[in-house]
Length: 401
Image (cartoon, rainbow, N blue to C red; front, top):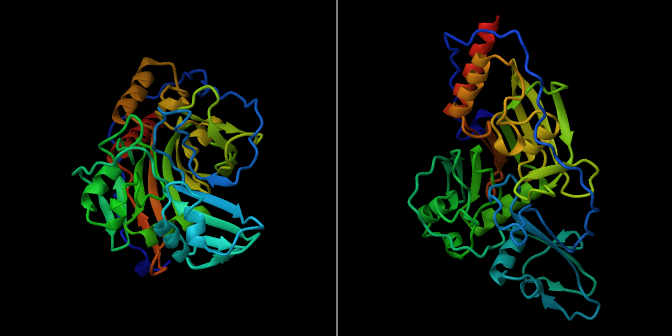
């Protein structure tokens, strides 16, 4: 990739090592295990005609956190009845998909997101008996009103078709049960209130992926229907690039590797996820990682998502015995490694206070521009709270030497 192709990169300042650090402690604390994940005991449900990418299940778990790292689209597949008369495909699909207008179907066709017998078709295509129809629709609507709010948004890049934002930790991406305001979508609804896409009544206009509330970093949002469909197709086809920086307990082995394991809702606690190693439940998930820096009892790790499941990095690393630092939901909020001495214990507690969230940052994002086709690349510096804790651990290592 040439420099001309790289847009919106922010230069990250070098981290300064502190002058002082806690004294080294020779005694080690017994290694604690992260929160146990129960093994699945049920078989997977049979395949359905409708496939959705979202792991949210609002009907059965209305109190779930809405922020995920999964794509936001629905994939439908239909086999036309043998007795079906020839009918425009936009009419055919809008009559069969709940809460989907002909306009949305037409936009999907224009973006190449409707396939008939594996070939893209236009909105005026007339369906024939036994045609196999596939349609990809981004952002299904929800039963919650999206209220515009004048909230600050860190904009990395913007043009007529899309906006890339650097989301702060603590901000929910879109409204859902328990989070009706103060979200990124509320803010964008205010700033883009004159755009047609943001006046459709949908809950998540332009959204094609999400990150957790307490994860910081980059998100791309479409500003029109065409861009929305084009971007959704890229996330569906996994042609986007996403790198995350995480601080985890312990030292993953090998130093560079791949974690593969189905991810789905925890059987006992629907607010969190678990890995189904036998593939009986959940969805296929792949996370590639490599250690950037070993910092004693913790490691700075880079993770690359091949898939985008809810809490994927967090649950995959916890499953391998290396929960993210201060990740309360997956056991990383406890002192899992180190010494029993009071000074070390206080050092870690101070780090927890400095970083009152899981140590995870969506650092890079790359994709093809939906109109020009040009590859765009964006990078966000590691936020100050994570940098501060990384520096403290570096100082601790220096103090031990």
